[in-house]
Every structure is written in C-alpha cells, then in structure tokens.
Length: 268
Image (cartoon, rainbow, N blue to C red):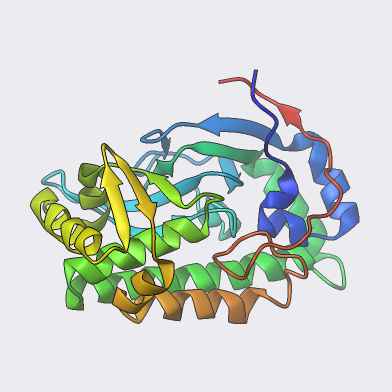
C-alpha cells in the first residue's frame, strides 16, 4: 500500500487549475511511488504519460555516445514532466530519471491532449496558458544550466544543484551520493568530493553516507552563482500570476493548500 502523504494540490500546476478542471481530472490521476534512479522516459521511446511530482524530483538528462550524461533540467512539485506531449511530440531526445524518490501523479498523454483540446475551445484556455508559461520557464532553466556548466566552478554548480533540489522537497536533508551528483552535473566524482568538502568546512552542509544536510542556506546561496536566482526569478515571473496558492519553494514559499481532491492509486 502507498502511504497517503501526498495530494494533487502539492503540485503547483495541478493546484492552479480551475476547480472544474481539477474535478474532471481527479479520477484519472494515478498516484505512484517512484524510486531514485528509476527511468521514466527512455531515449527516443514513445511517451505515454505525463508526471506531476509532489514529493519527488525528476531529472532530464542528455546522454552522449560514450555513456556520459549531464542534467539539463529538473522537475519537481512546481511543474510537469512531459512537455513534449504538450508540444505534440511523441518522444524525447532525453532520459528522465528520478533524482529524489517520492510520489508523483501520472496522467495518460491521451487524456492530456483531450483536456488541451477542451481548454483550447474555452475563452480562458487556462491549461494551455499554464503549460505554455511553464514550458518557457523550463527552456530558461535548460539554457541557464548549459551556461552554468560551461562557465562556473564545480563548487558553484553544486550549490545551485543543492538549492534547486532543496526548493522542490519538504526536507533540509537530501538523500544522494556524490556519484549521483557527479553524473547529474557531468563532472568527475573527485570534483564533487572536493567541492562538498569545501562547503562542509565552511559550515554550509553536512555530508555523511549519501545524505546531505543543509546547515546554512543563506550561506549556500551566497556561494552559488547567479544561475540559481535567474531561474527561480523566471519561474516566479512567468507562473506566480497563475499560482495563487503555490505549493513549491521553487517559485515561492508554500501556502495553505486547497481541499484535497480524491485520486485513485496504483501500487508499484
């Protein structure tokens, strides 16, 4: 049985939908538990579902022929995995891998398309507007990540990565190994070991056996490059208007959630 510690309104996109849309989608949302390292989208494979994380974080990775990879974007409770389906794509040239285990709601791509057609015929077209703005914000994140990986130090990249992940989770403790972080940033593990050691000596984090605890968040933000704030501000600029009650720190501090709407479960 899945522990019911997650509800659809913990995802900001779902929470921002009009009440009638939420009620219509509710029976078709499936709550799933996803594990760290689980592959949700394979490279160039057909896409059948979109995912709305609530207590999990998913990474979009570019994979090279030599087997190396790097994260180009992350998706947490601020958004949706599967914008390619929204943009009429049938597959992705990326991997989607679970970075932090937790819960997510998934929806069949065919149902999303039906809802988009319905939304497009309405005067407000709220779902289309939300997804267009979210996709634009996601593009900004992807572009800024490319700049960051090219021009900033591993220590700065690590700070950005930790802060962005922290914003999407309800805890100050992150369960991730140095090897996982190195794969996400596309750098050698030794570089992460050195950078994490520096941050720990400065009293900003504590690292022990695959767990990172954030001790001094303001200090960590001061050590990060401008990329973290640029992406966060762009998400705020594009989505705050549509998120009257935001449930993701990636956009703004959590607020009171709407009444929980029912959802059916699948057990995995």
